[in-house]
Length: 240
Length: 190
Image (spheres, rainbow over the protein chains, first blue to last red):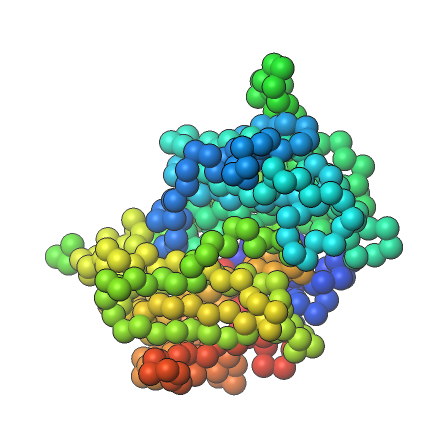
């Protein structure tokens, strides 16, 4: 089943058998609907804001004084709600493997080298126009155990909070022109080609910096607070 | 009215631990107002195997029932020593825990209330979208009238109610999360 509150043409189903880990982790029962309350129309987004400028440069934030190896890139874009409003001041978190396709993580057993100068973790806040910007290196593809000769296309994981508990989003950004897209069950769990295409960053020559780094643009559109009225929670007259 | 296509969700995968900061599961400081509680439990899959790579996130009101958020403009006081957001990665036993305070009542409509509860989002490898649920507290009489619990078939409500216990002189609420199958936790479509 797909949650009704999330458009079934956009969001993956919980059970997508080609991605084997969903088989024993997807709920059997129908999810229960209710009209969002103050608990869901609020959320941690506006309050969660601890970042330093260094956090947004993954090529240098390992604390070693050295620079990560790989194709240096800039990933930038805007965070918007579905009605086109920018989401300012919201936390954007990213994590990724290194240029060789290896995560700095205890469960990653891929026989590719670690890069001592790359943690693969970054964070920043959107500005007043909802824009974020990271400097990093292009992640490699890597094998995984889902099926014979399975490889994940190069991707960067994104986590965003947005204005409410309902706007919380965890997703992955892919790179244009990657032949592994068509073979990846995680990407193909998204029901429509149009929605899948929204996870593919665009090469952006206006973002590319001469003699420095290639640019990619990736906008993120979150479920917005305007999707649901919150009149019931206005204080009664005289209670302000 | 949506004019821009929403960005789809993808699984958090198994490699997210770098974004879970140390101490992100401790929501309180010595100055925080309210009754300290520990909330703990395990996350299980459909085979009752522990889910070792889940991230559990919580969002809650303070002990007086106020959310730290711009749309909660009620006169109920904020607590300067409490935000209400926490995060925990499960360990090799599928276990997570939070140190927090029990939240107060929060409004449903202008003159009706919801029982104290903690909002929960569960993400994991194998979850293409996160799952939303709620933790209620078994010793709260308001559970009987809670408008969200009333939406849940009676025989499944207990999956949303944390059992009260004690350890080391502290109140501990136990809340296991079962992703699939027998005693499957109620998840919400929101």
